[in-house]
Every structure is written in C-alpha cells, then in structure tokens.
Length: 211
Image (cartoon, rainbow, N blue to C red; front, side, top):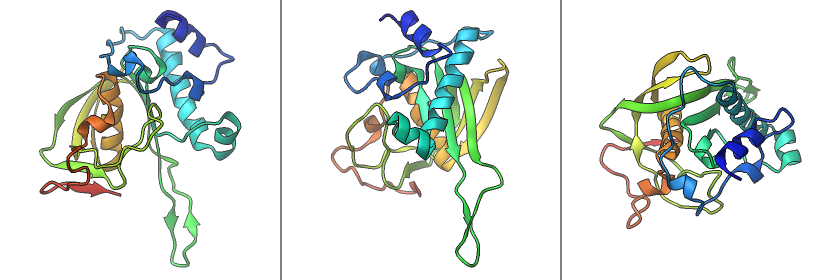
C-alpha cells in the first residue's frame, strides 16, 4: 500500500485505528523526517488527526482497549501509521485526587492535555533536563528499553490546531516529555536514542525525575 492508500484506509468512516495500523521498529518510516502538512488543512488531514485522538481515547478506556486489543497510549504520531506527515495527537489524563479518608476524587478536568497538533516544533527549551521515573515506552516498540530518556524539562512548542490556528504553548513535566516524544517521531528519532547506553540510569546534575 502506498501512503495515499494508507491514509485513505485510516480515514474511512468505518475504520477505527488499531494496533494493526501501527508500524513497529525496523519499518523505515519511523526513521524518516515527516513533511509539514499543507495549510489550510485538508479534510483528510483533519479526519486523520481526529482518528488518531480517538485511538488514544480507546486505548485508555479499559473496555474498548480489551475489546480491540490496544496498548494504552498518551501520544501518537503519523509516522507510526506509515505516513510522513507532521501530525501528532496527545491525550494525557489527569490523575484523581485523594481525600483525607483515602477515597479517590475524580479530577475536575478529565485531561491535562488533549490536542491534535499539526507541524509542531520546539522553538525554545530549558537548559535543565528531565526524564520519566520508570523510563519511556512506545506503541511502535514491542520490547522494554530500560533507562532514563533525557529530555528538556520545559519547552515552548509552536503548532497549528485542527481549526488551522497557530498556537504557542509552554509545557513542563510529563506533558513536555510526551510532546517531545511525539515531535521526535516526526523527525525520525526514537525515544531510546536519548538513553545513555553505557549508563542507562545515570542522573545528570540538576536533572528532574518526573513521577
């Protein structure tokens, strides 16, 4: 299937993106730099972004995830679907709070971040580094790769939303790490490229460990 056929299949009304659509390590698209999408956005690219976000919703829903055999995810890039387009979707749930009796209180806002981003790029970043406590995973990587994935602790990101509006946002902690992971995909970079393979759990001076 060529890339036009892949996209045509993904955006069919009847199609829900599943693990079968996600390419794995070794597939060349994961190591290629994606192209900017043309503005104003085409209907096809808008639908593609919505389908990618729907996949993340489904992957985080225990019933849908079990029914469709999905691994839970908080981000997805078009490269992971075999498409060389700078389209990413991010869906980061808010954790429930806990009251004095230890009961969970649902968060006021379900999501910390819920966005489809076109042509996203990091325009500035902190000198300070950060890494997720237990390391990172990826829907395109079916193995554990232990080690700290060293990223910028804070980033400013420019992108276009699905309405075609230019946005500039500042991110820190887990949302910053998640968006950097997905932007990396659009540049042909994998998360383990940031791991020090000689000393995977090395904590550099001043590095923040994000829980």
